[in-house]
Image 1: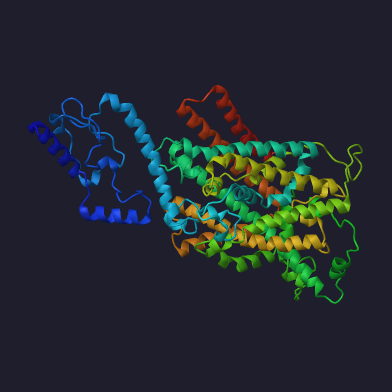
Image 2 (image 1 turned 90 degrees about the vertical axis):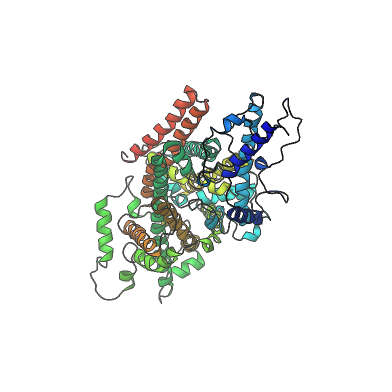
Amino acid sequence: MPPFFAEFTESVFRHFRRNEPDEENSAICSEKMSSYGAIGVDDNDTDPLLDDEPPRRLPPAGGVPIGRRRAISASQIGSIPSQSAATRQPYLFTGGLGLRDESLLSLHSEDDLHREHNNALRYRLYNRLDPGGEHLLQTMPDHVLPPNLFSILPFEELKDVSGKQGSIVTIFSIWNTMMGTSLLAMPWALQQAGLVLGIIIMLSMAAICFYTAYIVIESPKRLQDLSVDPLLAEFSDVCKSLFGRIGEYCAVVFSVCVLIGGVIVYWVLMSNFLYYTGAVVYESMQPNSTTIPVMENKTFTCDVYCPEQTSQWTIPQWEKQLYDAVSEMEGGETGDDSWSFDKFWTLRGTVPIYLAFALFPLMNFKSPTFFTKFNVLGTISVMYLLMFVFSKLLECGVNMDFSNPKSIHYVQLANMHFPALSGTLTLSYFIHNAVLTILRNQKHPENNARDLSIGYCLVAFCYVFIGFTFFAAFPVQRSCISDNFLNNFGAGDVLSSTARLFLLFQMITVLPLLMFLVRSQLFYAIFGQTWPGAIRVIILNVLLIAVAVGFATFYPNVGSILRYVGSISGLVYVFALPAMVYIKQSEAAGTLTPMKKYAHYGIIVIGVANLIAQFVI
């Protein structure tokens, strides 16, 4: 062997030995990674870039073999700065040695392929640790939520052997996640906008929210930041990569605001359902009860009444709300200090507090895995409400008059209070903070856009069906429609009483999941971990429950809470952030045109107008 070549070979190997880890740590890492089966497909798990034996290729003139490493002269080796083990080069390091011009293009394409391969290996490691996602909270990054949190499958055995879910399960998980409490307020919101204008707004908002949700699921794939794994990234990670810490905090804060709004609405509705269920049980135990005979004989037809608080177009004033709440807590207008059921069982006085004591222990579980078994109840409850409303249409018939404004059946085609519907729908179609988690467990990721569109179509159909059917069948003035349409039915109605009891149980199982999502996102942003200690968790839960009880007592207006929370949080998370992410990524990719730019700025303008309009009507 020529002396020059021997000196060159010895210098190159001496340079690489300085960057190698010690033998003990190398053996430990190799043993751990091989035991998971995540790296390597045969007995040789070593990096092919570090193999001592070069690929079998005819050497060029001069006798120097060409491998994947770049060759330089012996005089250049001495100028390379030495590095300690603490600054070891990355796995796919390609710098530091001179590259031949004729192989530049091919090596760059190989680097891209290897980068994609390593991302896949990283994802395989998580999946092999737990194919079904049962313990991903311990193996994935803390802020990455397990997909089964939103799945409608109650047991892991119902999934396939790979732990993945098909398109049908994915579609219904999307549908089940979006179908929430706003379903009960949809007839009221439709009445606020008018029949024709309301249906147009329902479909238009569905299209806008679907498009921005599609931007959310596509955004991790278009990231140029190699420090963010697109397979595990949340939308807050995308915002952090593009806009820095401010973008991340905006995404987290307004995602938490949506969840807190959900907790408040749940508390108001659970208090309502528990109050009426308890009242029915108490009345049935009285000697001269009229509730049970009416329920058994069903002597009424289309039993609908007009609650006093819904007899006006506008939202009730704060003064009246406060007066009613204080009156109930003082025992009503009788002033009787003796014990009575009506004194200790009040809708806006004692029942929300009873719920707080009963449900507080459920909020402090470290893991909500048990409650995910009841996710399927959401699907059953929606199906029940669809059948309930359809049965009322058959019972009451269609009661609409488009010509006589003095008729109790008169229907307005459009109404100036339509922002109440658009604000409510912004929250109704909100899935942007959970859609990446749901789709992460998809068996066929190439179908994500299709499955998301089908899910939105199902949700839009259910909202239009519930809203239009109840609106068309309502037998009295439509200004009487309550923002919780179950309030339009008396205690003697069998179907409405059953719906209240069933929805109460379903919401009790979902509330701990909402509290867990609030806790995990908020604490990870502040402390860098989802469980910073039992004391902090208890303090947070006490504060959230106190806020929820306060709203259930002094401002139990489901429709108003929905539209305010939806318009405020939706402005940032539904309209602004997705549009800004699209503009930023398209600009970086060189595909941003003036038409695309102005169209996405228009989406932001719609969100701003939607928010301002809530304070005008």
